[in-house]
Image (cartoon, rainbow, N blue to C red; front, side, top):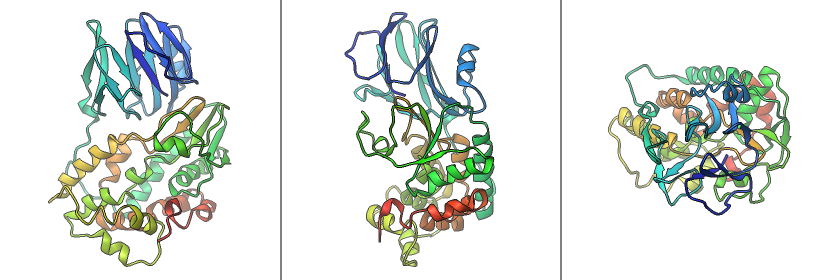
Length: 355
């Protein structure tokens, strides 16, 4: 789901359509659909994206989609938690040209007075408000209660593939498909370059066959297994994750922590005196951590990229966060509830990092 729209003609930089629409030069990757002067790609939860476009229902909803509307100048519409970074200047809007000015999640780009301009989206900001924290069971309930209807409301005729990676996040999402009775096929991920230097795309199963791929992208961050984010959240409660990992000889996350995060936590910066300050900072980090959107005929299902879910998870209590970041116990409990057979498929070590 890559695009580059400009009032100035540019060289072809993507493998799909390269055309002029209503005075704009447009280049996109493969897999986009077109209705009159509207280009679109992705999926909308609870709605059929084709129908949504034809009815010109551009209200934001959950999913992972983009609509480029050239019917009357230019309008950009996305799902309610835009999955990709956005860049612009007065003549161009793009999600691939990093030389332009970046637009974070609380903003967008509009076209008026013959130029592209910044548009505020302050409602995208997640901010702490005092409320009761969620205990372990409450977090498991929240995840399962969120995933099941999301999967049920996924409207697609594409074949469903799931990465056979042993990752706890992708297996959790696959378990929701098992729970609602939607079948999919496990596939081995390829390492071939697919036209993007972003790390996530090098881990996709890539095929020219149009399909929807079940993924667990953003799971580390949203489901409280990023050790740095979790340490910030736990800091004001006197919890030291270095000590928590030292208590266990083996866990799903221990090797990953030792290889990638122990040194980061030696000189933890910034420091947060309250959970509220940490909450706001971590929320901002997560929502602006753009990991995965679609590429050519591979449509990626990314349910953890959701503003509501992100906010709910950040209210987990300290004991629950520790159990999750050390050994993915919350995720395993959710898998046990949705599809117990998938527990046996979880790798012993995240990303095969052996402590």
